[in-house]
Amino acid sequence: MKKILTILGARPQFIKASVLSKILLERGEFEEILLHTGQHFDDNMSQIFFEQMKIPKPRYNLGIHGKHHAQMTGEMLTGIEAVLDKERPDIVLVYGDTNSTLAGALAAAKWPCKLVHVEGGLRSFNQDMPEEINRIITDTVSDLILCPTNTALDNLKREGLDKQPKLMVVCGDIMKDAVINFKPIALQVTTLLKDHSEIRLPFVLATIHRQENTADKACLENIFSALEKLQETYTVVMPLHPRTKAQLQKFNLNPSIVMIDPVGYFDMLALLDQCELVITDSGGLQKEAYFNCKPCVIVREQTEWVELVEKGFARLAGVNTQKITEAVAYFETAKLDYTEQIYGSEVGEKIYTALKQI
Ligand code: UDP
Image 1: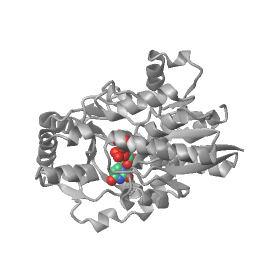
Image 2 (image 1 turned 180 degrees about the vertical axis):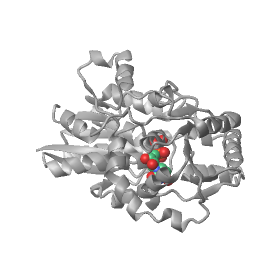
Image 3 (image 1 turned 180 degrees about the horizontal axis):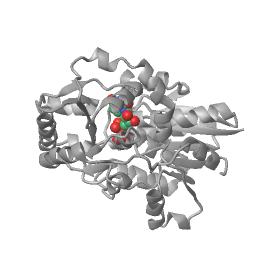
Image 4 (image 1 turned 135 degrees about the vertical axis):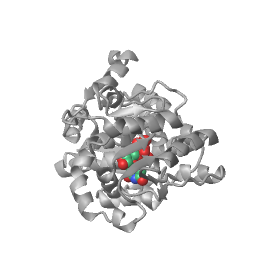
């Protein structure tokens, strides 16, 4: 039986793994071992996802977090290499674009095993984003790249990766499966709206956490000034990422919107179900807005999920206060047709089939 070592570290990776790890366990054709780098470590950023989605307990937790990029990635590389030496997996599987992805990819690239990248080929064409560097390097050294979209595959071809002995397969977006798998149960068990009487309908769901948006005081002021304006019409609810919380404190900003602690995935699905609209700089949430038939204002200059913008489900507003409020006003009357499945379906099954080919 082939052994897969899956490297996880951040919240969106737990959500993606919940789909594939379940299939791997059910089919019993591969042995999967999970390694948690520790990048996200708070209970409400890590533990709750494993519990709610019944993701198997990681055999290893490196406990590496809260460090700068180089130190974090370097320590992860050393830790992952030690596990590779011990477990000797046939396949290393990484998700997405975090430092855990990069460390897993670099460690595996120099080890006699196959490297699989789930969510490969995405590009923002903005190398100021640490995530963009992580994606490009991971794809370059991967043996099997699972692309969520045809656009992602085209990106890889443009970089010449199709000239190399790699398998590249368009499977769709694995987060779609997570929404399908967990939304019914999430809506049954959530008590978030009951517990937070300050979240009154109609509300807008907002999340901000990207380094480029939180590092600078002026950026944060622009974003929160738009959200405060919207608070005149809606309740604006923001589950506050630890990085954003720290930066707001550092800059002495205390915006008057409803800020709550980060929520588990089930409560997030409930918020997505009940909200009018999503404002975010998150990659995952842009698509989850679409999967829940909610328009999305993207607080960035570009997105990797270009189909959302091209087809009118999302608008790019950057960190411009006026553009953010204008985009919200636009969506108040826009008629959007969500019948087309632009990010595929049964994605976990397609990834599983591709895994059997290497
Ligand atoms: N998420 C969550 N609780 C929160 C905020 C986000 O469960 O309080 C989920 C969200 O639904 C999405 C994922 O975390 O599935 C996105 O993670 P994040 O925005 O941290 O990263 P990105 O997608 O930008 O890589």
